[in-house]
Each structure stands twice: as C-alpha cells, then as structure tokens.
Image 1 (cartoon, rainbow over the protein chains, first blue to last red):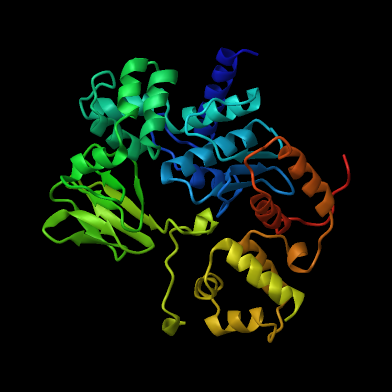
Image 2: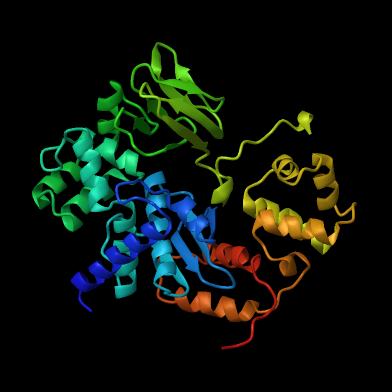
Length: 284
Length: 109
C-alpha cells in the first residue's frame, strides 16, 4: 500500500472514531479524554528517552512521556490511539524529532491518524475562517491562536497545513517554522514571557481551555471567570494566570461557558486525574 | 508492611493521587487510607475492588499475582529491540507500569 492509500485509510479511521464518539468534524478533540472514553488506560510517566507507548494487553494502555511539551504530548497520545484503532499490537516510540518521518507503514498510519484526528481539514479551515483569516496569508500569531484552540503544537499545525491540507507552500511553512515560539508569545502579550499563552477570543469554539500552572489565558473583554485555579493578572483584568490544579468557568459575553482546566506540568499518573484538585487534609 | 499494603501504595502513586484524593474518591477518611497503606487495617474484598477501579489496576495484581509477566515482557522487549535511543531504565518503567494491570495468565492463542 502506498502512502496515499495509507493516508486515506488513516483519515477515514479518524473520521469514523469522531463519528462513533459523536464529535463533530470541526470540533477540537482532547486525545486523553477520547482515549479514556475508549476504555484505554492513559498514563503520564517520566521517561526521558520515550515518546510514548501502546500496549493492547492485558487491557489497552497508552503511556506518554510527561517531559515533552503539552502539544507534543497530546499528539503522541493521538498517535498511540492510532496504533490501538489499527490493532498494531505493542508499540514503543522512542524520543524523536518533531515532525520526523515515520519509519514504517504502521508508524505512518498512526502519525497520519493523529493529524487527521486532531486537525481535520474542516476544523482547521473553520478555525481560520471564523476569524476571517486564510492559512495562505495568516501570520505566525494567527497560526498560534489556531494551534492553541486545537490543542496541538505550532509547528505541528504548520506542517499539517503544508503537507496534508496543502493550504500553504513549503517555503511559507519553512518561514513560519523558523520563528521561535517565545517571539510569537511575546508579540501576543506585548512582552517576553516564559510560560505558554492561550489567546481565547470570541471565536474560540472548543468547550475547554486546557492549560498548565503558570500559563496565561487572555480573555476577550467583558469575559468573566469563576474558580480558584486561576487569578487575574494585576493591571490586566482580562488576563488570567493559572495558579493551581483544578477547574473553573469562563463566561464569554455571548453567554457561552468554557471550562478552564488546569494541570501541573510535573503530573505523573493517570490522565483522568490531571485536573483533580488536591484537598486540605483538615477537611477529611 | 504486607504485600497488599505495598501494592496499594504503589498503585496510588502510579495513578498520581494523594491519600487525601483517594479518601475523597472513595468516601473514606484520609487516616483510613494511611492505615491501610501501612498494613495496620484490614481491607475488605469490596474495598480492594474499589481501589483497583480508581487506580485502574487488576485485583489480581493487588493480591500479589505476577502470572504472565514473562510473556508480556518478552513482547514489549521485542517491540523495543530496534530502538537505539530508548534507555533501559525507561523501558523498565514501562514494564513496571504494565505489570500493575496484569490479571491472571490468559490462555495462549
């Protein structure tokens, strides 16, 4: 089977899984929630030389290296979910370069499945179109906003838009990939920043905003936040800083509510507990 | 400390939960979880099932079963045979994690 046929197979499988789970083609997907819903045990461990692992026995399990960037971890989980869907058996993926070429048809299928699951053509096109942007002319900051909404890495989105969706040229993709992430984040917040940044605008259609402690969430004006896992930044009433593990509610001016879910980047354990607040022993 | 107590603590740590979180999930007092993990309190079969459920481990493993390890270890090692960057200690971490979800040995196919 050639890469075109494998690619079609992967896109079809990702579409089927979305349909089975009643996830619309334009909706952003959390691969941890999806894999857990598929009754797969999803764990984060600290293993510097590992990217991820899938084991079908004795019950399906996915392991993701927590030391990788957030977008990369999600992509790896979607990749391992691909091995599960295609019945590939035990797979161990060692640490590799981002966007490196798959080494076998099975790896190609899993890689393409992950891209198709997290970045469907409809989801990507819709995220740009809602904001009156076009991938072909979009700036790096605009790609960044879309990547954050879809929950994937900036360069992963750029590569997908170039290679799979063919909406930008190789030269444009190269130029975008050369821009350092801190520069993009700095341009969005107006100063240099070490933490990740989530520009939630009125067009943010995902029902969740998944961040880690210390990350910044930039809200549209007149949005309201309720919860204890984040607080507003002094002097910037519509910028939140995630302060502790837990969940909160963002209410947009339109009345839409988004769930802010904060995890700790150092979390090691089952993915389903990543937002579970720890509690004061005194209360027990 | 008993094997069961030791495995309950290991499973909780693998799940990324504190004793307080476990107490809340199972509607127990935190000191009860502490006593159980110290081997100073008996654990009913219903409680073992509940611990297994929230930790996503097998009851058989909590009760000390190690059957079938060689089969699965061999298959994982086979999958890892061509990986040049994967460190042995990381592979061992994966094998330890997989050991917790093992049940009784399944018949060979």
